[in-house]
Image (cartoon, rainbow over all chains, first blue to last red; front, top):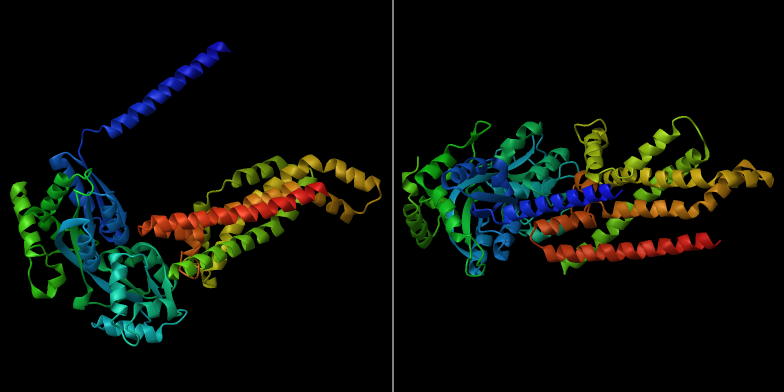
Length: 318
Length: 217
C-alpha cells in the first residue's frame, strides 16, 4: 500500500515537473513572436499560408495568425491583443487610426466583391454592373424562398454591403432594410458559413471573390450574377498597432513583416498566388491609378513603408 | 437601445425553444424510461449503458448529424427545416432524450419492485401500478428533466450549426454570445451570459420547489 502511494507521488511530481517545463518553455521561447489578427477572407484564401512560412523561415520568428471578422481584428488591435492587423474596411480603418489605436496604413492589395445568387435569378440582377441598381431590384423582388443573406458580423464585407444599401433606392437606408425587409436574413457568421446558408436558402449574398471560388463547387445552382462595379473594389491594408499605448507589442517585427509583403518579391508572390485556377489578389502598393482611389495610401505612409523596405533590405529578396 | 430589445427577444426565444425541446423529449423519454425500468430483459444492461454514454453526447456532433439530415443535399432536405427554430428543437430533443430516459431508468430499476408488489397486494390495477411507480419516482424524474433543460439552454454547438444564428429568427442566447465576442463586443457577451445564468437560476429554483413538494407528498 505504502509502495503504491510512493509511486503515485513520484508520478505526480514528474507530471507536474513536465507541465511546468512545457509552460516555461512556451513562455520563455527564444523565437520572437508576431501576433497578426486578420480577416477570415484573407486567411481562408490561403495566401498567408504562402507568405508566413516563407517569412518565418527567412527571419527565424513565429507568426501567430488569428483569423476573425474585421470588427474583431480591429478590436484586437485597440486592445493590444495583436501587433499588426490586416483588414479591409476603409472607413473603419480611418476611424481606428483617428482614435489613436495605430498608424501607418499600408494598403497593398485588393480583390473585389461580387453578388452571388440562384441561377433562376427571380430578382433579375444577372448582368448588371451597377451594383446599387442590383440591390434595388433585390429589395423589390426578394421572396421567402429567395431571401438575401447578410453576414451581419461587422466584417469588411458587411460594411460594404451596408454602404450599398445606404445608396440603393427606394429607402437609401441600411437600417430600413435590416429592420423592415421580411426577406433579409442576418447570418451573423463568416463568409464561408454565410455562403453555405445562401445555398441552403436559395438566396442572394454579397461575397468576396476569393471565398466564392473556394465554395462555388459546393454550391450548384448558384452563380456570380453581378460584378465589375468600381464600388465593389475591396482593398486590404496592414495597420500597425500603437506601441506607445501597448508597450508589449513587437513593433519591429510587425514592420519587418509588412516590409516583406511590400517588397517587389512579396508583391510578386501575391500577384502570382493562384487558387483553383484563379488569381485572388492584385497588388496595388505604389499604384496611384485614380479608379483605385480607396486603395491609395497617403504619401506619408508610402514614404514610411518604402523607407522600411530599404531599411530591412527587402528589395534584394528573391 | 436597439440592443435591449434584441436581448429580450433572444432570451425569450432561447427559453421557448429549449423548453419545447425538453417537453417533447420528456414526453418520449419518461414513458420509455418507466417501461424499460420496470422490466428485466436480455440486453437491458447494454441499452442502459448506451443511454448513459449518450448523456454526454457532444452537442456539436449532434448538430452535424442533424445538419446532414436536414441540408438541401441531405435525405430530409425537401422539408426545408435547416436554419429554422424547428431544427434547433429537433437537435436539442435528441440531446435531451438520453438524459431524461437514462436517469428515469436507473431510478426506477432500483425503486420499483416493492412499489409494484405493494400496489398489486393492495388490489391495485395495472394503471395503478404505472401511476404509483411514476409518482414515487417523481423526484429523480424531475431531476432528469432539469438536467436536460439545463443542457438545452446552455448548449451552443447544435444551435449554431442547425439554427444558423440568424438574427430575430434562430439566434439563441448562447449563439448571440459567440457572435458578440467575435465582433469584439466581449462586455455585451458577458452581460448576455449573466442574464442567461440568472434566468437559468430562477427556472431551476422553480423546478426545485416543485421537486421538494413532490418529495413531501
